[in-house]
Amino acid sequence: MYVDVMTTPQRLSQIGGFAQRIQASGFSGLLLTETGRTAYLNAAVASQSAPGLELSTGVAVAFPRSPFITAASAWELQEATGGRFRLGLGTQVRTHVVRRYGMPFEHPGPRLRDYVLAVKACFAAFRTGKLDHHGEFYDLDFITPQWSPGPIDAPDPKVDVAAVNPWMLRMAGEVADGVHIHPIGEPGYIARHVLPNVAAGAAKAGRSPSDIAKIVPVMTIVGDTDEERANERELVRASMSFYGSTPNYAFIWDEAGFEGTTARLREKQKAGDFAGMASQITDDHIATFATESTWDGLADALIAKYDGIATRIVLYNAGSETGRLEKYGEIARLIAARHPAAG
Image 1 (cartoon, one colour):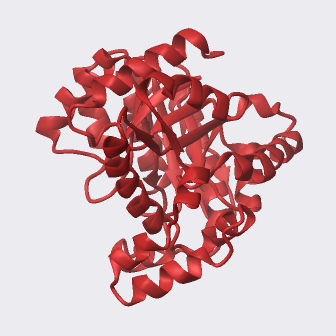
Image 2: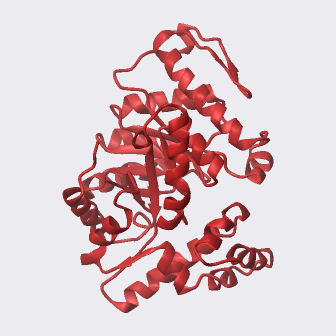
Image 3: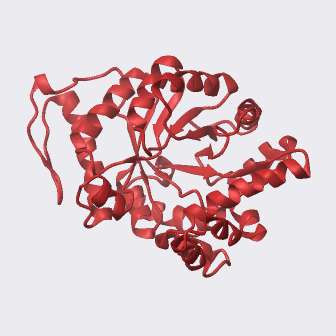
């Protein structure tokens, strides 16, 4: 089981030092989300500052970039990391894609499926000089040596997708190399939806479910005193209220026994009542969707919760907590020692 750190992209002058701290602390890798700054540029700087650190986009928004542009960026990062880069892609939501990026969003699931296949066709073209992809949304059939980065001394980058609903999970199993689980994807949801649907998609493509990495963000509440954990709990409560307000994720709350959570969150959100949003997340929600522990017990708690479920666990809040990154790194080392990664 690999243990990574999640972070939003930082200033390019800062991300190199942060990546070095991640590597020195004992983590397997650094996962870069994409918000106001691009994940790709941060990954490029990190690759040069912390050689040997595994890097991934988790996730980069697909549709605003052509598949060729995305493939070329991933190709260069795979070369720069010596084969330690994973390309994580997601659809984002309609409002962002249409109103912020100015791009089409119709049929996002099938569009992302075709996008992944187009990216992989570009990888093949960089090696062979022949580009031949004709899908429902993307037609790519022209490349010349001048416009190709050419072969690299590393395997093709792994391509992972963010998926929540059953169709997307089956698609991930069929065409992707890994699936990014949603931050509120607790083990019950993973067992009910992620594992069987990914397996069904893999079977359709004649693949083994073990070929598809399960990348699971983990919200943690850690401290050796009640006061320390209480402060952490409120930060997690706010994060859960944000993620849980999206209608497409309502079924995750409902199936875990918290029916109507999303509707209540959205009511507060529409009123601009962010404190009220957080108040809708109860301690019972947190007990189900987060991992709470003392420092001494955290490694065992994470192994017990995610053994047999996750290929990589991504510590959601480790990178944002001043003075605690190295303590989380010790946990990553313990998990690596007790539960070595399969490959």
